[in-house]
Image (cartoon, rainbow, N blue to C red; front, side, top):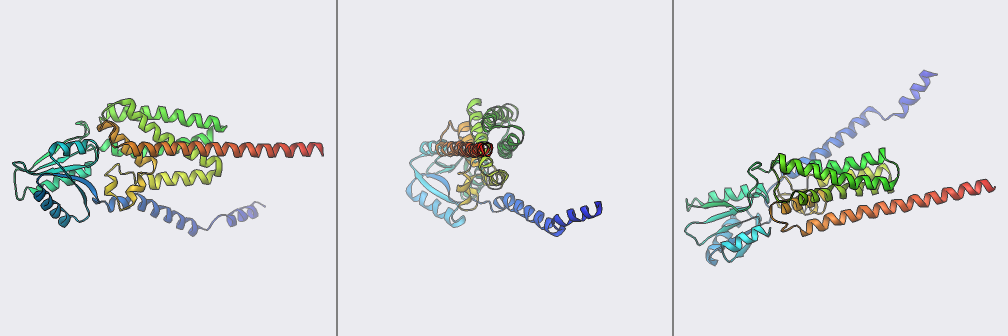
Length: 336
């Protein structure tokens, strides 16, 4: 009997080749999701300001278009002060100031270290005709983390935090209301912990600790509540689809390791519509730019939070409807 039972079980299991094929497909998708954006990283329509006489501005713009076609979206500004103001308001990533004794390249490494590096390299090309070109980092990264490694490395924990919260709460906590309360509570405590590590230990963040923690809390809450709602409505499939979206799209397209404009065309914009990308932009703005340029990011995070609450509400209504149908069926069985 045991031999027959084992044979039946082996027959029900998928063939080894099918399992190997599935694992290969999963591995390939993971590689594409995480490596493709980095492998195709290049400046695309990066907002850049140029200040100086009109003739000099036109000459530099023409040179940039010829040397790096489509790399920059040029905005002419009146003078150096206007260029600095545009950088501090996150309207541009940097600027070239002409008409002085020597050209000056303005960068903002806190906004995007990768783009600041490109602009610094650009200054070397300008120096070919004028060796006195000056590079000024208008909004620099903190001295304790001059490469921005801590903030870039924090992208994955932000995503994993929301996914892990939803997965564990659905498995360990009964009752939708308690799960939602757990998700909100964890978003707050997790955000306070992550912000403390990034700001006080790594030195990767500046500004208000509680404002930074608030951004992180919105990101974790948006992801966890959305996944809870999907699981409530669709079960494990909903949870899996939501987690895959956040992990395979949201994380690699967040732009935290470079900038949205460094990602392949269209994908950077998509990443900013997902919680990880919006959180990264909002966190940079709040920490280094006094909140400038964060309106869209906060709108995206708020929309995902609202979506999560709506999905949870729909799940609760569906659950109550099933309970009513079940109760009526039991009553009918008793009366019969």
